[in-house]
Image (cartoon, rainbow over the protein chains, first blue to last red):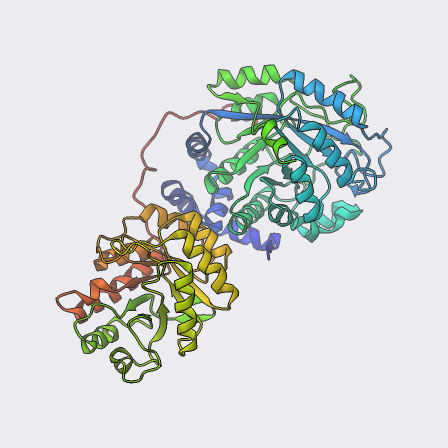
Length: 368
Length: 256
């Protein structure tokens, strides 16, 4: 059973680390949670450039000169949860909608024409309106066209995941938002999401269901980022140990302006975010690292090749947002608003190959 | 302390009973090794017979007997040997060996996995001898093996830890103890296996056929301990790292 230590305990581990520890790890490798703590500690800050170089070398060795690209598509903005930081939160007075199958087709056709082959389906949590049947229908529709279809929706049961895998969903992301129980309870005011443990064990249900790839993550700006990153490392190592067949990704969304006007509870600078990315890369050479359009173009461009392996591009975070210009009803405001072509151009300029296809739609279709 | 399936061992050196010049030499060498786990071939030993030459000299209070299925060529033969061992008082622990090739005695991965699945269902504590294949190690753990025993080199060859890179992967992924078995021909080989984080080593031939088996048993005991201590103390790695590799990609783009 996975247990995440309390944040004060994690803080003690991090504070016990010295510059000597960091130097030793940079020379000899990062082999334990204690080592990860050192790379996340304030003692590692002077070594950020060295960490960047190490992270880059490992990323190059394990992933080659490539960057995967995906686009999110928002299926629904209905939500039964009240989460203090989220634009879809149930008490927010926004216009809400759920896409019909025709609308899903229209939205995804646009993304397909733009050149995307990997899409991520996102929605608020309203299981009566958007449950496993709806997702299955969407998956069966999309797998004819797309090489891979991932989802980022409410946590489901293991059987549901097995069913969706069969329907063509290859990857599922469920972010804990914060591993800090106290803060978790403070910001998840109502709804099914208020159950910390059920959410935490979602990766376990997913991997047990045979899902090809599982994504975990923390929303940065809720609790201390160092402790959050250490908890992520513990979660990651636990899944690796117990489900060796599962590929893993980690996301680091920083809080963005959203309806409801929630102000971040802690500051996470670009330097902090970078330290976190480099540390996790050095800790786990094979984990996919996702950097979305929440971040500015300047920052994303600078990070190309240094650790992240997957970018979103040309994203819209409101349901139906690709087929109509209106961006009201979005979950959060994106920062990097460039098109897929523009993002691909800069990736190529940095000497990397932008990969728009991972897996194959024919492969997804054979085991009907 | 080492723990396998709820049983603890102070010594991380496991030994065998084959190839000794006499049962007296065997007893003295095993005593000198400090080993607490001794594997015995069912086809050599009669566990029921107090007059058996091996049983007669080994104190079962002192040595935990690990019956092995040496000689089994497939899963079926291994399972028959296992049940025979249990029926004759050998307990439910088993070193599973399935070696269809009499020349190399290399383990058959498919039959070993099959037998592990069946024997675990039949309440055996299974410690499979295996080639140093990380995926096989994971599959055996998934099937319920209580430890995995990858080989360092083909049995009896004394060639050392030729499989070191594979064994390192097995150790890094393991959820059960990893015992390096077979091929360790010198104390330095055992020390190396322990230094990289193996939980124990099993040594038979190198002790049994040494000029002085008792002296060699002591040497292996010390090497095993030294290797473990070095692992726990945290070895410095020989480094690719200190070298300034390719030029840096600067961080000037950061806003903070």
